[in-house]
Amino acid sequence: MNYKIVRLNTSAKSDITSSVLIIYTGGTLGMAYDESGALVPFNFGQILEKVPSLTQMNIAITVISFPEPIDSSNVNMQHWVDMAYIIFENYDSYDGFVILHGTDTMAYSASMLSYMLQGLSKPVIFTGAQLPISAMRSDARENLMTSLEIATAKANGKPIVPEVCIFFNHMLLRGNRSKKVQSVHFDAFESENYPALAESGIVIDYNYAAIKPFEEGVKLRYSNKLNNHVVVVKLFPGITAEVLEACLSIKGLRGVILETYGSGNSPSEAWFLDILEKAVKRGLIILNVSQCNGGRVIQGRYQTSKDLLRIGILSGGDITTEAAVTKMMFILGNESSDAQIRRKLVMPIAGEMSLTGFA
Picture 1 (cartoon, rainbow, N blue to C red):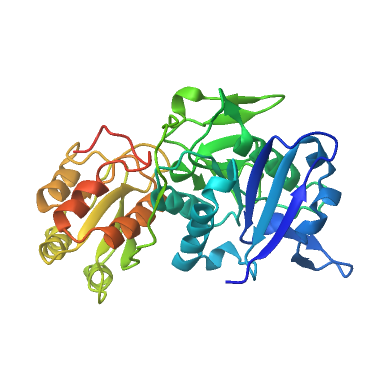
Picture 2 (cartoon, one colour):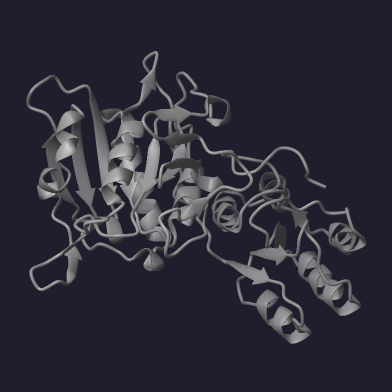
């Protein structure tokens, strides 16, 4: 792929203290208005003109742009492979990484990269904007500046945040715990089941207890094996046997994310359970996640979820749908044994779910 590369030294007055690789995939942050008023991809060679405060940071910035910026609604597995590979190939050359990405699927991408980059010990910060960088009231400048600061932040010579995160509207969230919840306000993301990793105000206040600890001497491992033969089935009152059968009978289907009510509850009608049980017996891997933004699946708390447990449905605990879908794709791509797939789905592999509550 022919990436566009721009190198910037943000300060000519003092020694450069850190280096960051920015990966621009697309999204609102990297757009600007042209003379006709239309939005066009921003020329990152001019970023110091748009964000002059960057010159105070004393960091070397390299920008790698996708050949054609993508709307995040069009993100697919190849884009995840490209993002992860760029980080893997450049891992030893930079202190941290910032990925500029559209907000609509940012939580999916951040989740997937947290799985693909095992052994990560440097910051990978996803960020974006609700308004273009050239707009007067844009949130792009603050999101970009603070993301760069977090990507280079160290304590005792070690990165403070050695994991994949999303920074948006003053909040730093674990990427695979995040969910987009707003389309018209600046506070677009939340993490209901895990505390924020940091909050930016006059200073950046890090929640050290919630951040993944730095691991000395761990080698970064990169895997590009993914399997997207998965489907999300969202339950709703009135769902029919025909709809459920059609979803679970897709040719080549391997995994199902079953979005249930509350703490993992579902209809208790015989036809519903019979369809699911037959699907499990013919080898489908079904993971139960809650439709609620907060809380967790606890199979067995109520009779309706005891039936799911009995027929072999797996509990997703407090995982988000975004993290569950990408985790299913990742594990199906890297494991061939059903027993291993089922075991890894219900255990955290990148901090995406809690250890407790897996009935």
